[in-house]
Length: 225
Image (cartoon, rainbow, N blue to C red; front, side, top):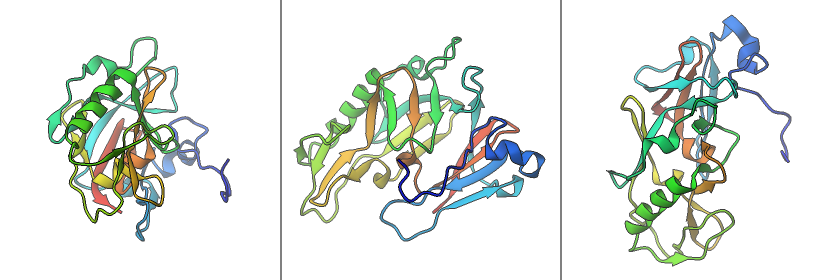
């Protein structure tokens, strides 16, 4: 499953994770930056309070007693081209039974959204990319484009709206990705079979992300990699 990997480093919030075992040495705090595909830049992983950057946009963590090792955050909506997609906030809410909600996860590649949210989000993106030639879907991706021969393309921005006000706007490489060697690019989101939303590692690439478990926050930026 993990070809070429020497092992796994658990960074969840539970006591068995590497962060939990470090205890006071890390103060429950670390930051990471996942290198973007196709670039020659370097990623990073740092532990301790000194790893927390100045100027990050902070989002509160939400504790789920049924899944205490996961990093749940409050997502209030999604945006395409600077316009908020009409999706109810309730679809992203963690309920009293510990169901639903939104998890940040580096082990999941593609961001998953409940079907109703995904469909509205995808349709908004498609409506703003009518200038691009569509092609058939690939694997889990149902929205793909034939960009063979294009040097550059213009696409709408994609944004996550978080509870409390922070907005994370993604670079195009984090949501329109190549899936073959002949110019096919796909919208890198997929519907979830459950009510759980997962923000995956493709959408996190190139953005410094800080986890302050002791104080209950996740930060985005300001640094990139």
